[in-house]
Image (cartoon, rainbow, N blue to C red; front, side):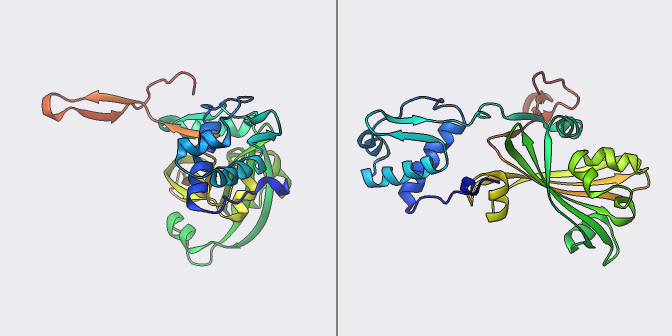
Amino acid sequence: MRAEAVQILPEGVKARRVYLSLRDQITAGDLRDGETLPGEQKLAEAFGVSRVTVRRALEALAQGGLIERRAGSGTRVRARPAAGQRAAMNFNTLMPQLVEMGQKTTARLLSFSYSAAPDFVSSAMGFERDTKVQIATRVRFAGDVPFSHLTTYVPAQIAQNYSENDLATTPLFQLLERSGVKIKEAHQSVSATLAGPEVAEALEVEVGSALLSLRRVVRDVNGAGVEYLAGLYRPDMFRLEMPLSRVGHGSTRHWEPAIGQDEGGT
C-alpha cells in the first residue's frame, strides 16, 4: 500500500474548487497525459481566483501524482495509466458482468473474521439476531490500480467450506457454488457515498472523494440469504449504464429500461 496514496484536499474552498475541476478533467481524459497546463496566472484568471489559490490546488494535484511541475518547462499532466479505461457496466446485465470482472481482475484480502451479523445485514438477509457470519473485505485491482472495495457477509455454516486463502484467490460466487449453494436471485441497489480514511487509502483516492456504492443481497432457491455485499467503486474506474427504449403512444410515451438489449462494448 503506498503511504502517499491518501491525499488531503487543499485548504480553502476556492483552492478545492480549482483542484477538483482540474482533477476531474484529468481523470476524464479532457486533459491528456503529457499536456502542458496554462501558467498559474492564466489559471487564476480562468477560475477567478488568486495565484496563491491556484498554487495550492496544483500542489495537491502534484502530491496526488496527477501533474508534474518542473521549473522552466511548465506543469504537465501525468494521467494514470488506467485513465480512460473505466469499466462500463450495463445495469441490466450487471450480475454476470461483475462475475466476469471477478475472473479477470486480482484481489487483495484486507480482513477476514467471524462474528455476529450487524443489524443492517440481519434485517436485509432475514437472519435471526446474533446469527454468525463470515466478514471479509477485499480490494480488487485492474492491473495495479484499485477500483473496488468489497465487504461480504456470508452465513458461517456456508463460509466454513472455504478458507481465507480461497477468498484471496477465487471469486466469491465460485466459492458459494462450490460449497453447494444454489443461487436463484439477488436484489441490488446503487447510490453514492464519500470515501472515509480507510477506504480512501485502500482505493488510493482522496478522503472525501465520491464513490459509487452498491449493496446486494443474494438468495438461494429456498429464499434464504447467502451473501450480503457492500461494494464501493471508484467512479473514474467504473460506471453503470442503462439502455432505454421510448415506449407508449401520445402523451403516455415514456422511457423504460431496455431489458435484454445487447450493448456492445460493455
